[in-house]
Image (cartoon, rainbow over all chains, first blue to last red; front, side, top):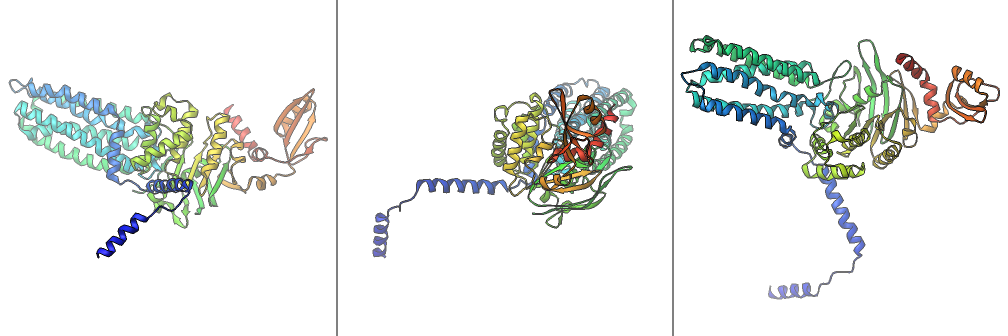
Length: 262
Length: 296
């Protein structure tokens, strides 16, 4: 063993690097780097990595406006004015805030169509459906976070039952989403964004008007609100599926169907 | 690699945009020539899979490209005729965005984006917003995005629109350099764009492929139909009204005309070698006149 070890040591000590052409060595390094890059270029990201990348491509304005909206709403819901059980105030606040939060994401979802990017996006690895799905998921989760924060603050601030608060907040939100999704399903262009804005204003007007009628917000009306909530939720889910499927369509001069499979 | 178009047909309610078109494409550059409304864009959209054909299909090495789904789109680079951009994006952000859609990893996307910005001479404005770009710069950015994933099938619809002559020459060189082992299909109205770089010219008319071949082969089909003659200006006016004139040049008190016609247009006319532009005029002068009338 010791002899072997000594021999190995001697051999290693006497070893000298054989002469080589430095130019060829550089060429080998260059080709190795090239091969590595080519190999890397064939690697593709999965949907979750795609989703995280899409998060960075959502317009900063969406987050800024959403944050500004929260900054405006939170002080009101935390500090009042809910004195003397002023139900109308919270109902009015929810009637304005929920449709606005629902609307905010739609121009962002529509931007592929309003900016003429749909054709390029449709023939990439992640098809239109997956791109739209990613955007809707990110924006939907952000909306849900906003609504949860508002709900938590309102419940703490007003002391009203949480269930009723959920209904008062989510019915206007769902109805606005239903309206905007229906628009998105049928109008895939810049005009779609304007129509969504009109839907949002209409919902604000409608629910603000309702909030002024006290009896609609009393405990006795909870059943009707629950009914509205489930109806709007069912339509929301249905329209979501329909809209999602419609992302296979590009609006050329005639209605055309994209053949990009999910 | 073989891309086969099998009896591709696209019908609208009252119009057939592409009519039972069949072709087999192997690596090389294909120039798609045709007048407006010939069906070029519809054909390209069907090749890219963003339009469903009414009948027929596109296969890649025998596999249906629709069934191949993302595996096919992975091989694809596409520049549409009219494409938009997100104005708030910089050139670099735009390329990184498209790279993400094409599934490239972050590190590869950065390397490719930098390489391509340099290739299309936009590296100095990489961090400038696209809304500040000129039409030519946007077109170059569009070309760069199509090349991001090193596509094996590159479909370019009017890629040279908005490019100045110098940029067009640079584009031609870029396509020639990058076309090795790729199927490049480019449609254009500018005949000279494809004349020098295309291995095969596909001529489309009314949704059909009326000619397919090497530039010299297909120009040979109108051999004997191109004439040159020197006439007085008054006679030149008459000839211009009667025939398709591909060129008119004043030479002293006479006009030199280049005429595309099956019959000899005047006594002193001599036959000359046809070019691709003559071929285009031979097949599409009627369409051009019709479009002019429609505009009027």
